[in-house]
Length: 417
Image (cartoon, rainbow, N blue to C red; front, top):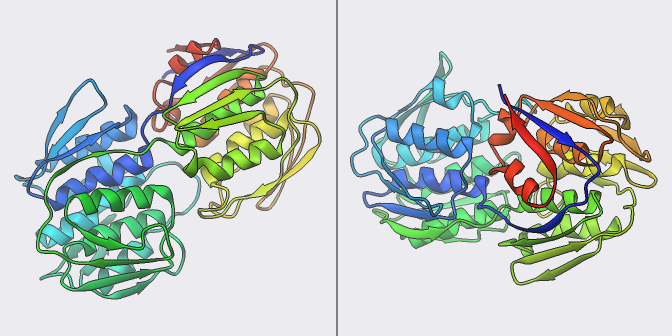
């Protein structure tokens, strides 16, 4: 099993390119199932989750063509299997996103209940509620969701809780449903908006993406298109934190400033020296950051996917901070590992209280989920000595060649087996 070994204390310096967004690319790949003509996606990141999704679509009969320029062409003309099996779905929650497209185009689907990071329950009840409202018959049993329909029909659906994948699944299904569908209390994340834009390019009629109410008017069929996936706002935030924590001078290109605004604002509040341009973010940090408190909440508020990284920042910042996690009940699993590095963190329910220390001390630690992995890498970059991070397969699910990118900035980091 691969590990990362870091020798801390080196300021990062140089330029890196931000990859395409995993959380935007995965639902778009599922959207290929809606059309009989090829969908070309550009700026697709090379990640384990992307590889898993390609394997899942491929075993359904989707023809997959890859090139070396981060592009993938998906041709779903000859889909011959409407089942998403457990052995592929268990490692990645986004696999549930084949449910809506399969049901809308083929009238049936059998999808294993999803897995992914063990950061909370993340039920699929909002997916099921929405699809039933559109006329699907859904039966749960033996670890699978079995759905059938004689034809989806538009309906008004109000989400009980904001669900990104629930919104995406229902929006994709509604593109081929008869009549109009209104999704109330919809997720507003930029990745939802990017999926809507891709679907519109394929011929869908969608209004309101990015607001709490999305309106979809069904069409008879969708066509193929070519679409460029947005840049990854979480990778952008992670590298911004890395640069500021190490006191570095780093330039990020292909960075979407607008979608990263809440992250940027918090860093500036903490004392980060940032400059913003057209798809460019520059850091020139020459002083220690101040501790920053925040609460996680759905977009446009602070993203839960950046909580662990900012906790790592706070462990070496000046002062005390409070982090309230409101999305996932199990997303403080990195705390124990950060403590092994000398962090001063106390947990009270869904609140973490952090008091910054002058420096962290290297140790052997273990990654527990995707974003927790990133927090340990950030901590290792500033820890005194050699830090070893085990179980980094989590990291490979969401960060493209992170050790190569950090190495190009001067970090002393290597992958070992």
